[in-house]
Image (cartoon, rainbow over all chains, first blue to last red; front, side, top):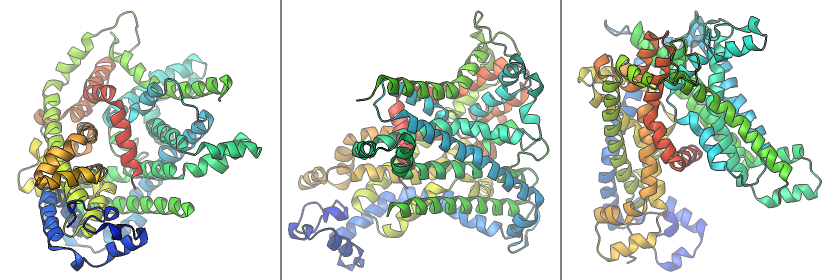
Length: 330
Length: 270
């Protein structure tokens, strides 16, 4: 009997004799996929022990996350103001996504935010990662510390900082006045046209450093030989970027895209603290409508439907982006 | 070999982006130290007293205590559950793991808005709204996916020979976890603790939904209220914001590597 039954890894093939281990990966993988009855009683007992260890986490997760998600689905099929009896409306709440102008408008806002939250920081991050080259930089630690800083600041503080910057006599307007562009000065977050882009820039600022740190780390993992080969072949920096750097960063770009796009879909804290969706409805987001409909002027079923749709879209986006980056991999 | 021009260019790019990122924060820091209510920068008269004034005016004393209690409770709970479930999924194996583990990973892509509404009514029914305990329970449950994922990966990276050796010595599962796995996984546990500290401390949405009573609200919520009331005291507002951000900033300054590694590898796993 091998001594290491406790180790559950397939690649170690713990309970198997050494000979089996040499059979190679394919064999091991197939054996692993076979139905469970082949497990020795000891391993099976061990797995019940494992279940006991995992139980507290599973219970907490089921209670706080899984069960309420199922309830959300249920809620979303009703029209309910939180007090009186709920009426069944079937998929009515979901149909509102195509008919309710407020909701449609918030979806359009998300599209605008995606440009600022996702596309812009990723493009800028890629450009700077390409310009940085591959040298180990002196002071890299300090730069990384600074670039990553917005990630650890709580959203409330980020919002307060930028509210100040955009304020009527904040630094942005004073700078504009100082360089003779005083006509452009305005209350940025109170302006129907500019409030949404202004919010977007906050997202760009937050994500830019993250993308850069991610991409620079990714570039460092690309084999040097590829770059040397490209230079020998006479590739210029632009071709080098498109032929080597960009394909090499596929995984990192996928991650950055997933995180920032879902971030835009979920935008709440920033919007709530800076504009509360205003002026008018010019900066509403689905998450903001969800909060209002769930807790301020209750239309609970609709709010639950919004939550489900946000989550489903985020899930689809994540799967789609991962699929895309995997496919190119093959 | 890289040329000097290339090196200078590198520094120029990094310095430029760093300034873009840092400028708003530094500006804000000096706004917090400004003696005037309008927040005009005045480098010769730094008003350190602003922090004390903001502390009292915004009720940050009790809010920081609330945040500390919630965060410590949530971090302790999350860490224990992460270690136990990571051990189960990474080393022991779990009955039904082919279903259970993907179900847990699914949670990595889910955020609060999809379960917060039923949870609110459920908690209202059992008296967990408007309570620190309620928030702690939510944070613990939400932290399971990342914690289980993180500690499972950590324990799987431990050389199996170490576990085998302990088994030969007759160690039971509990002793293997406690005396073999945990001691060598200390850096990973520290990373987990730091990340869950940051995520809990920085939370705004859940507190907004579940805490209505101003006397027990955590710091992020208190700052949200404060910024609504003190729009004219820009310097105090900035000081208050820095007070709220400080605990995480201090940890970030001390454990930079853990934060960056944790967030990046957490993001890269999918």
